[in-house]
Length: 96
Image (cartoon, rainbow, N blue to C red):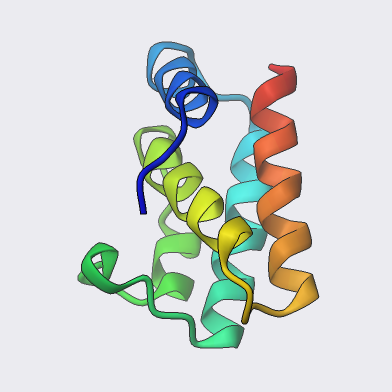
């Protein structure tokens, strides 16, 4: 899936700025939902489980989690909770 221009701008913003704790919390919630939903994003499959990523999240991981959020947002077969978590992360990054 190709990301649109706005998504790429948000990812760049995320890479260029120091991430605050509200964004880190939103990342953690999304990763935990992804673990519960046993979602597979194909080529983006990390070396560790999503729950391990949530437990060890660092500011430099946020752009990758944001990319996952955009992919989840576009998937039709994802739970409403997971879509809400993805949207919450995207909005948190838009606001900072």
